[in-house]
Image (cartoon, helix red, strand yellow):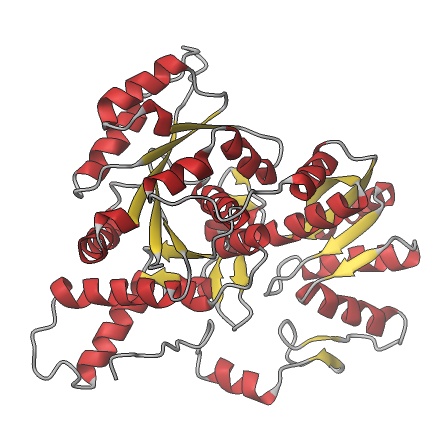
Length: 447
């Protein structure tokens, strides 16, 4: 069968759960016997996420084929249990760079290069390329409807719909319904505004996923139905839950998978078996016992707020491992600079069952991390060093066990007498050329 496309867009606010919704839809369709791929569109002009500050955009997910990608692709892979290619992440920067490179190479044969058709064609080409051979391609559009940056992609998706037929396309709007403290009533007006903004792009949603603190009642469903021309049966509630892995089960209670298949005039290939998934979700929610883990990092602050998305994959790896062992865990996020500013506070690490030193770069917080590593080694607390964390474990051992005073990584100290962590020659070349991020490689099918 030809590939069917599901577009997942967001309304009202960012961070409303588009990534989890996209991943959940992929898992559900897999359970019904269909092959799926998941695509993330990021409207920023950066070529990829490799040079973005983690506290601003969350962690960088590295794909099997070397892409430095938005963290949502990590969520996708965890849900559908498949490796996803770096070509499944599309950015504004990639689109314009490819089109401009092609123009500079004379491939447009003197044409005037314009938004229509050249930019739109490049977007569509990438979406189609990433979806090859799959029954379903679920395309998540970053940001929220109404953002200027989203307009080219919504335009391109509508153009793609005209080419493949409306019977091969479905639009899903994930929106947020606030419940103000001063007026404890779920408000639908922001969702109605998001629907109107999407309509300005010539798109009406086929499904509306309503994120809120609580489940949606029939009154609110009817209000949304009347403003969106969408059957209330396709207005799906997605209340706050204990774990994101519960979301596919919640959607299944609302028969969302069957409703999507019915939209495309398809039937299940197989009966979904959620028994193992349900067992793991129950283990996450009700573990036999709990342990305490300290994660000592530095990408935690964003203005006056403390964020942990910089280390999302570490937390989710713990969730997966703990679920399979029926163990729960409590994480405390500790800023490594605390141990530099208040050395005596290192004693607090005695209360933890394990310590994780995650990746990073630069010299801020380094000595605090090394102090924590030393404390864990001396007091025999299980320690996991990841990337930079493991490098600093080597530094700590070299200094305090091997007696190499002043040992360091040259990333922090180029003049260290003992450069126990250093760059490979090809890395030096990259640094000298200031060619940061993953290689900008795209197979140009127009050549």
